Image (tube, rainbow, N blue to C red; front, side):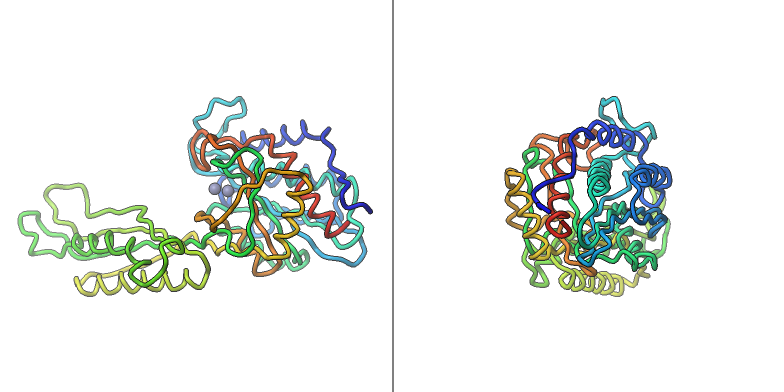
Length: 387
Ligand SMILES: [Zn+2]
Ligand SMILES: [Zn+2]
């Protein structure tokens, strides 16, 4: 089998573009992807895969194209979820669901993986098996963990795992990857401080958390440098703060400070989280305040495996794509990173255009021209590993 020949046929592009736009019109947010999963299941089922799994880690859908011969298990993953953002663009296929939008391009990523499934159905791999995974709940960081923890995942546990993300700000169609650290780890920390309200004329009769809150607002962003982390390796971003109630007669009794902590790898992230907890605990204790800490939206760092990265780079070269140099890990997070704990994994980016609206902007829309390119890249990787 000539690994350079692809089964993907440009003639299916109108069907993939139509699928992408249907998905775009009916976005569902993380954990609620029922209709999206049903649409994807119908599309993939028609391709007659050798196995079809649904309800993976929530609404996840996976299909297996099996050679029946020994060889590697190779998984290609996309995301099912949209965002709780009101779409404002003027495209004909704009979201029909108020307040929800496919504004990260997961509709496009699904069309790419659907196209790859079609190519695998048109010509089965000759060794090993190819698995396409439509993963739920990427935006909250919960989906990859839920899929991997699902007992049904055992049956499709891969040797290799690949994913892509489109990236505005980068020339349209330029491709970027690097071995090693690729995306930052990330986690949200919410800090609640509780004292005692009082009449605004007698603040000394209460216990205001205002001073403690200010210490955290200045202390948290300064934390990475204070504990000796390089600024390019770690950062803390304040995302929300609130003090008391909007009432002129009341001295405040409670405050909330929320921050998102990010760093280049999972070990650094643990140290950063621990230091932030220590800081909050110390400040609250010194001011005599009750403290409640909570975390959410945990994303593991994405580490690209060297062998998997080399496979992707060869696919870039075979497709003669312009290369977007990725000199440093990307600060945003992707829950695909967790697949690195079970497989040799690699995530790469495809440019969505220098002046394209950014991910999560209200007027963002996935560029359809990337669909064929994405399918061809994934199919090249699949053919090299599985023929
Ligand atoms: Zn997103
Ligand atoms: Zn995304």
